[in-house]
Image 1 (cartoon, rainbow, N blue to C red):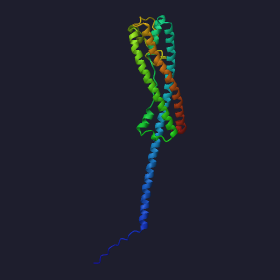
Image 2 (tube, one colour):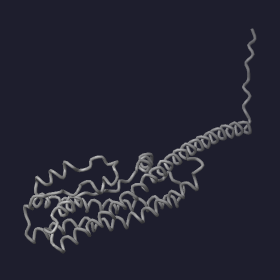
Image 3 (cartoon, rainbow, N blue to C red):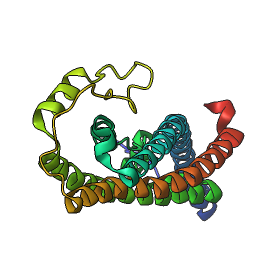
Image 4 (cartoon, rainbow, N blue to C red):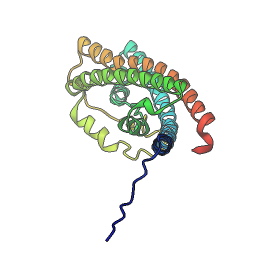
Length: 255
């Protein structure tokens, strides 16, 4: 029986080249498609993170206003302490108690950083393509760092001040003032007017000139820091508003 063997006709070089080019094109197009898809995903993430930063800025601006007003009121209260000290604290001891207790309070700027933290955790600021926006974010971060450093310094001074008040103020009078303080922070002026003026007070536990001079100085030191804080808060407000404008102008339609 005669067997016929099929003969394999070799492909021409042109056919091999065509197949290679088609395969190369398919792989290349797939690569580009994947890159485009990843870029679109990163772009969406960038916009979402910047939207969160935009929302954080709104909270920061409210914080800036609140703390700036508080610090200004506290600075005015410190002037009352100086005026009382100049004429002698014994001329109005209830007011001295009130001023010392009030100046021991403080209000701090608390940066809303959820958007920026999300951005950093997702791969860093490299996701932000606009160099001007990136630069402005960095300026805001530097300013906030300075404010937080000043607040830490103020907190240390307040600690020394409060320790001295424990030695000078009478515990029964302090306890009476604490029991009558406003604890509902929603009440008008509750933050800066937490303590009311006591109607009667017991004598100070330490009342010589040296101790009184020391506690007045300790009261004034944190207040002095609030002036620097307010100066930086003013600049932070400008920088934050500029950053917010840049974000809204570029991405506002997508927020």
